[in-house]
Length: 435
Image (tube, rainbow, N blue to C red; front, side, top):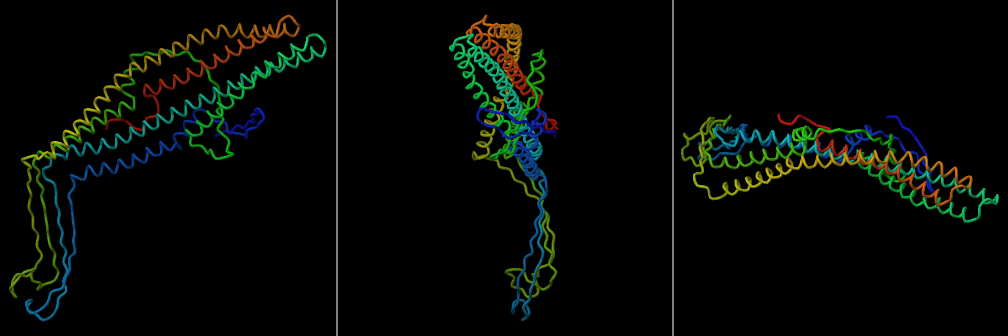
């Protein structure tokens, strides 16, 4: 990354050099380092483990035990004591289970939910970083604009001082010019504080080093105003297809539906096959409770069978759990409908905001040229004594107001476009949705 170092001279203070950073570099740093995004990535790995838990219902269960013991005495037919050990194993396999297909789908949905949660975290953090970048650039340019006007007023102070010393004006003209120049000092300081705050927000979004003495990130670039035309109907359809929060809401509905069906599987019968076996490498070991010296010896064997269960009467455990899961699904469905219904209103609001900003910008453009020309003319006339300090102050204030208005319009349009990209689902996408 290319670094550009600059020294910003402030009112009674000097900041350390800070690295310049572009918007693309800001978004990349946020994507790589933001803790909320890192946490969402870890939850995606956790979801992969949850999928294995859901899928475990279809796999066989194998157990292995190695018992041991001692047997001896007259009853065993010998006075010697025998040590023995054997291997006992069992295998069970679900044969019929109504929850199996729903569990398989639920496991896949769990991973998709985690992916969309990661997408949502990425969108939120990238959007926050983008807005913080625009805010920092806006505050920096606003500070620069006010400092530029203050320098004009300082030049006027110097000019009036020379004219006062030459006896061309009285002391009131010099005093008025000084008061006007110093009146901008609080505005410049306020812009600097706002700029430092925006830099701090930008650094937090990027997870930059914000320890004491560390330089804050310096945004590179300028705010521009662009002509924007949008097709509302087309963008609404795009948003319904691409919005991460809508995709996530749909997945939550699907997950709740599968949860309900998994619980409802308790109404249906299930069957399990089983195999058990004992391997005994020694001979002459009697079974427990045997009374014969020559019979009932323990030997290796394999047994197989199947178990069939069906809960005919529900005591409320399954039915109550089904009702609870169904209510969760219905709540998720309502939230999904609210999100989908709000898309058109949200995009319409942003479109109207963009249209209003365009009209405002055009009006300010027309007035900015006149304000600048008037300010230059009044400044020239002031130097020759043909204009008063009041006229100069009004001209400079008008010029600052129009320039600040143009800057604010550019800032608000960039923020609105960022919100438009978010509302239409154009931010970073981690993965394809339905698999």
